[in-house]
Image 1 (cartoon, one colour):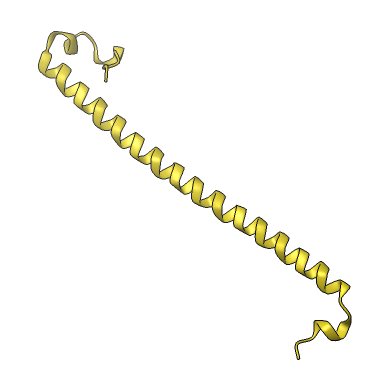
Image 2 (cartoon, one colour):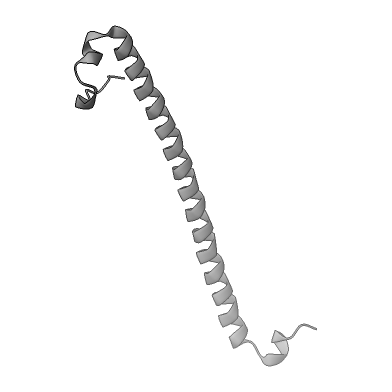
Length: 80
């Protein structure tokens, strides 16, 4: 991964290989942590979508069952 140039560090990081290495390690660690958090967020979004999809399907199924029961005679609706 290439290290981006950040003007806030000033010219000192350019003159010191050790400082350059440390800054690169910090950037890589931060990038990895960010990628991990984004992956968790993506997983959470997938889970939420799955729950909502199931809720929608179950709601439609329940509605269809209720419509079917409305068409049946009253005696057929009551459990025996």
